[in-house]
Image (cartoon, rainbow, N blue to C red; front, side, top):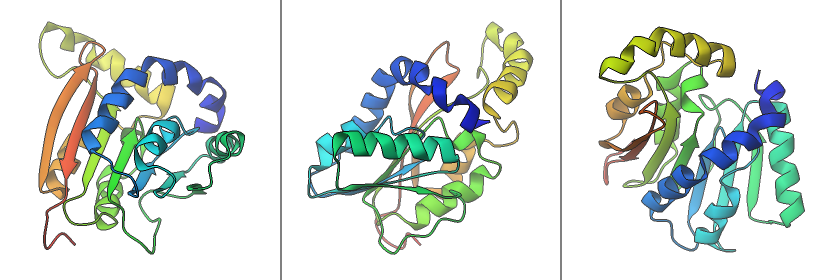
Length: 203
C-alpha cells in the first residue's frame, strides 16, 4: 500500500510540515547526535534533522516500503548528504550496533502490525535519557465529533492500512519512563507525543 502512496506523499509532507518542525524542536538535538527515523517514508524529516545534528551527526532511517526507501535515497543523493543512511527494514526487528541519542516516528507507528513491539525495539536502541517524538493519527478522543469515528476508522484503514488494534499512545506510555501528549491538531485526529527513556537502567 505504501509503495502505491509513495508518489503522493508530498501532499501530506506540506500539510504536516509545521507539526514535524515542532516535534523535532522537542527532541532538543545537538551537533554530533545520532538520530533514528522510524518509518521515514521519502525522507521528509531528513533536512531539518541534519540542520540540528550537523555534518558530525548521523541520521539512520528505516522504512518497510521499497518505493519509499528508493525515494528517501534519491533525496539523499540529490542533496549529497554523507551522514544519512536509509535501510529497508521492519521496525519491530531491525538491529543496530550503536545506540541513538533521539528518535522520531512521523505517521508511521499506527500503520505497523505490532505497535508495541516497534516501540519496544526503538526503546532498546536509545541511549539512557534519550527522547522519542511521535506524530500520528487516530480517532477523535472526545466530544460530539466522536460520532464520526466509525467512518474515520474505515477511512484510515483504506487510506493508510491503519491498524485499529494498535494503540500508539498506550504503547509508548507502557514502554517509556515518561510520555506526554504535547499537541493535537486537524480536529484532534492527529497528535504529537514526546517520550523519554529512563536515565539509568533503561534496557
